[in-house]
Image (cartoon, rainbow, N blue to C red; front, side, top):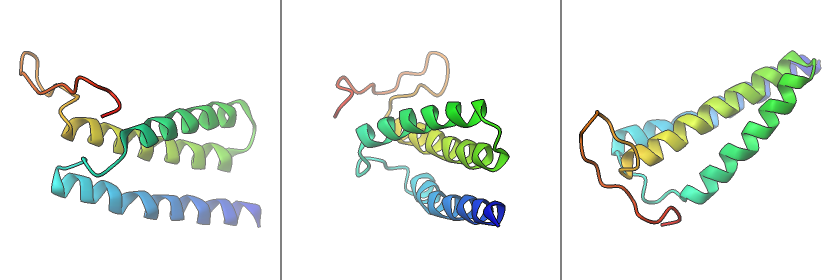
Length: 101
């Protein structure tokens, strides 16, 4: 029974992240998303994933890994569309001077 709840939780987490990621890719704008929140969320999911990998519960590992993956993708897209990531070697992109902007 607990494994079923874990599967349902994983599916719900994926269903929650996908619309945000699709919206980011389509609009190519991330100004309305708070970078600080996503960085904190990334750090939190990293800690939870490390805890899950140290344990013996496979469903906790899958849920933690999927959350970490989607938070990482979302954070990467936010940085990409704000100009914080260089796409090609030597290509100049606008780099945000202040991290908390």
